[in-house]
Length: 320
Image 1 (cartoon, rainbow, N blue to C red):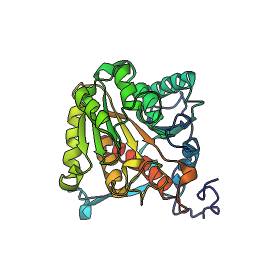
Image 2 (cartoon, rainbow, N blue to C red):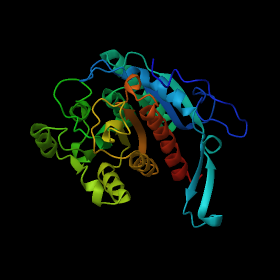
Image 3 (cartoon, rainbow, N blue to C red):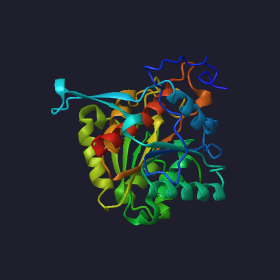
Image 4 (cartoon, rainbow, N blue to C red):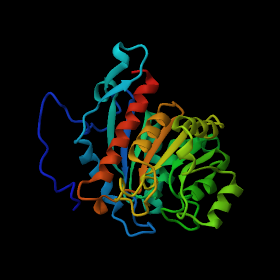
């Protein structure tokens, strides 16, 4: 059991409502603005992992937060800020977890379930699980538009390995029909890859934005480039948020995170900026092992905040 799961019960204050605890989808209700679904992959991980425990841990961590946010710098608002309560502005649903996503049948079932949700939802957020979940998540979001779809990864790794593991989802998606010229990889790090896979990325025509570039380029400029490349086909865009792109100090629950990665605020801001674009129809949150997190649950809490940043992006693109 993680330290987060063993925490004392949370306090109750009616003037400070907690977020999360969203209802299941209902076919009789209007389409949702955002749906979360757990895809607890872990069995093919290159590092020993209990990442299958993470969807439940993220749901629990969401209860630590409210859905209130302040959007600074809005020129049309009094005092240069605008307030928003996401749980009031958006219809958010929780579709539960898919079963056995590491098996062939389970992966196909996860793909179909995500495709169902994507057909009736503005944004699907898939909670991993290790990075193997990116295959059914991206395929489900793309649906019949795989040939025109795009993929943006926030990841320290190329994920182009041979075989089937959490190190191979990008290669598997290309083999399934995703155009590699519409793939952008942000945050690729030194000492975390190999010459062979760097060469493979180059030969496929994948756009790579190295971690070092993020020291000198504005994040909004990087996001604009990624959306331009991934969206060139006119189809839906899926975003893979592999939390091991972050510095190990803020993501100790990611087995492959290294010192020198992104800061938590950078990943949070990039998430909101990307999702504010209506072409982004899916997000997955990957590589967090709740059982390996620090005692304060910082990695799982970051994953929960990424769900809320995605919701904030949806609200922004809807003008809420």
